[in-house]
Length: 372
Image 1: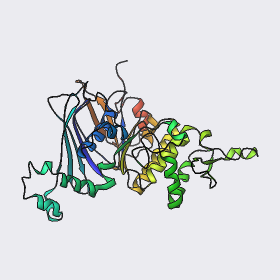
Image 2: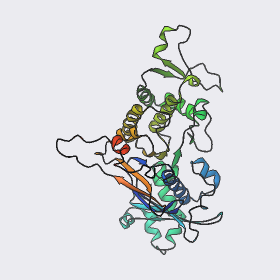
Image 3: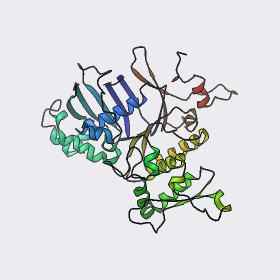
């Protein structure tokens, strides 16, 4: 997993450092920079790979237009660093931006103990470690290859759109699933065919919806046809309507279907972000969703960052578990984005602790507007 990220001089972020867990939730008022943090991670990850063309940025969910115009200090480069736990290494990218011109210097710092086990690093010691090493594409590619889907190479920021889900849009440049929900149908077909245990897990997750009884993909579809058969347990009284398809499903159902597929699939990224995870979901369902996704993340080795404005999402967290972390994001007096981890504190004996949702609404956690 990615243990730590550092972002400097990017959008509203002057200096930011986050120690990540497996499940990470960002809260804060509108415009405080939550999405900027996610974009900074994606921007830096692509910078390490030398892929900062608009086509790469857009496909990963990163807004590329005028990213340096409002806040960026053109006298200093943007700097992104990621510490990966398995190799005790830092992947870095320094992006000098002047107008629309990019000068990318990727690099990897590593723990010296790795010299004994990694031949590529031992060989590189013959060169100037402080300069040539930081520009050695072979070493960078080694770390990216070893990290594979678990590292930065596949990072995506998902912002779901109902139109992409209900139409079962084909995946775009990034497969198997796109940032707005594209490619879901094809991935479901693959899971049903090759991983019946994962398909069962998806259906068990959907049982959080009271009306849900079953879901299947018909076997008699035409070649280009994309359709699911959805069973609502309350339809039994009407013999003429026994099944629904995705066009009759509410958007909350389709969002859940995508999330569970994203978390159980072996083909989807190991490290990703979901912007506004609470979108279209009932508050109590948000609690159950967070609990379910946490279990899935541990089982299927996923690491995720969520943003939310719904206090109920917080009640699905167990902050006694160090794998689950909550960060309050705000703008300081200079307008810079700052993030502070909220650590669970023991309450007074005999006094019931307030729920995280209640603490958030009352302003105990921060992350709320204070100017009105």
